[in-house]
Image 1: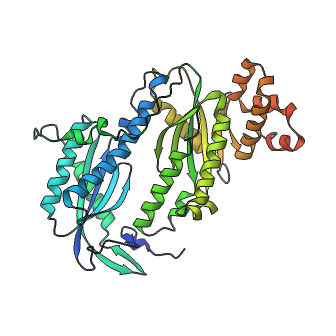
Image 2 (image 1 turned 120 degrees about the horizontal axis):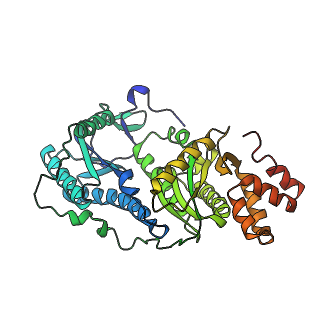
Image 3 (image 1 turned 45 degrees about the vertical axis):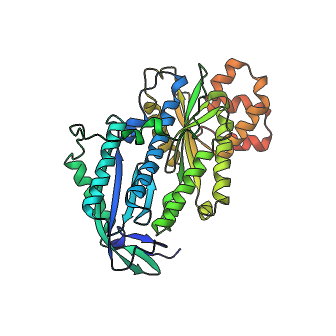
Length: 400
């Protein structure tokens, strides 16, 4: 893919297509919005296994809120005066036609800021900044110049630094209900599955080499389509799993839970779905040459009422880093007794197949013990496998 940006131009916004009103040599306003406090908002304290999906719903709410802000901006400025440039969970960039004054932009955004603060009881705060930019043509692409991304970042940071978002003292009445948790579209399904007292594990996945793929994308409109396609692929990857549920999806990051006795099959099928979707998606199929999936599996102990789910999220992240240290990445880290070992996906596939075929022949107490100890599982299932299968799994745990 042809290189477009030099280091000097890395803060410019490049486009393949832009609206007709965003004319050359005319200054328009670029607006950036960031939500702050997202992680604390999503990962609140969890009382039991049964309401763990509160985390999932709060994650969905942040994504819904981002879209709701975008719709509000389009409504206030008019669709012909506002162009959404980028939109991801908690972050927006948009272009506003020059005829909309900076004073009017500031007034509209400040009101949204206050509505969100009140709708979330201050748990989420919104910061914003804007600057003027002129569109130029460069190497068959259009771009908004003057280091616009750098200037936007500085404007947002300035507002954060000066704590301008101290909104509780402002008693101006606002329609915070428009951004409330309850306002989230009723058509969005809520996962009400309860895991009761069943043992569960936390699953953490991350796509490998995604940065290599994105470095070949130089226009924000293409980047936006790729990001949305990727988000859709990751969310759908667990859609048909009756014993597992997605808790959080952000960028190329998945955090989910699954029943202990079924997690090997779950992660095998999820990986297969992601790879197939990437291959078939027109915005992602070039990534198939780079893609790998690293992951981790962490047992969620019976202390979930006393320990927030964020603890297991962070523990899974630490183990994920071990999987990414393996040459070539594309592996899964999990504990085997007191050790952390890494498994290749072909080893997981063989273990899952053997376990599915022979688990009834293994006593229940032995079954649960080996599901959290891959070396014990390898030894228990070894007597059922062919020589070819044994050649794949015999190296599990060796050299680690």
